[in-house]
Image (tube, rainbow, N blue to C red; front, side, top):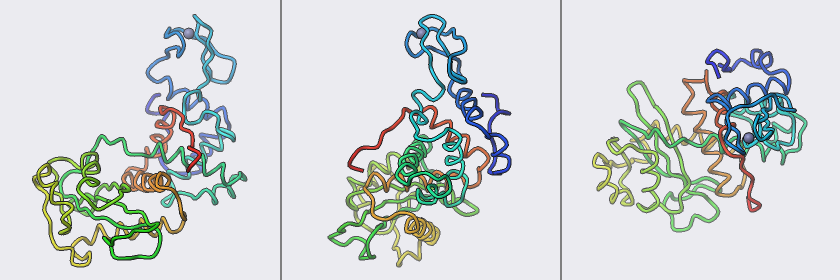
Length: 298
Ligand SMILES: [Zn+2]
C-alpha cells in the first residue's frame, strides 16, 4: 500500500469519507494484504486474475479464489466490514476506547457479538515485543478487582495481580507495559523483564525482595523505599488512571480477558503522541494476523 493511501489521523468526518461502504474496506484490506505482492495460498504461483468477490484474487494456475479477508481477523465477522472498520476506528482513536455495551448500542448489535470482535482487536493490540523499555524504568505491582488490601498479602482471592513498568523520559513519561502474574516473585517477574525491559535499562523498584534475584541479569536495577508510592509518583498516577478505566468498563473477567484490556490500554497509551498511524497500524495487524477464536472457557 502506498503511503498516501494509508488512513491517517483521528478525524471522524475524514474517516466517514474514506470508508463509506464495504467496498472501501475490502479495497483497503486487499491493499494491505498483498502489499508485498500476490502469492497463491494453495499452489504458490504469483500470477492472478480478478476473482469473483469484490477485490478477491484468483490464481491463474490453480484457480483458487482468495478474498481479501480470508485468513485475517476480519474473516467470518458477524456484521458488515464497514461496521468492523468503524468499531476498530473508535476503539483505537477514542482516548478511552469503547466498551462492548457502548458498541452494541451504537451499532445495534448484540453485546456478545461486540465483545467477541473486541477481543480480536485486543489480540491485535498486543505488544509486538520488539521494543523493550529503555533508560529509566519504574516498576511496581498492583491488584485489580475486589476491595483493596495489603499489596503483598497472603491471599489474593479473586483479585488479579499485575506487574507494570513505566519509562521515565526527560520531559515526563514514555511507554508502559503491564502483565498479569500469579505471585510477586522473581520467577514471575523474570518473563516480564525479559520481554519488556532492555538489559541496560536503569530499572527502579521498591524494596521488595522478589526483585533481588533479577539484579544478576539486570545490572542497573536499583531498589529504593517506596514511601507509600510517593517515590514513584508518575507510575502511581499511571496505575490510578489504568484502574479507573478498568473499573468503568470491566467487571469480573478471566485472566486472559483482563490481559486483553491491559494490552488495549497500553496500545493506545504508548501511541498517545503518535495518533496519526494508530488506526492504520491496527488494521494492518488485524490483516496480517491469523484469525483467532475465543476459547469456550473465556
Ligand atoms: Zn494457485
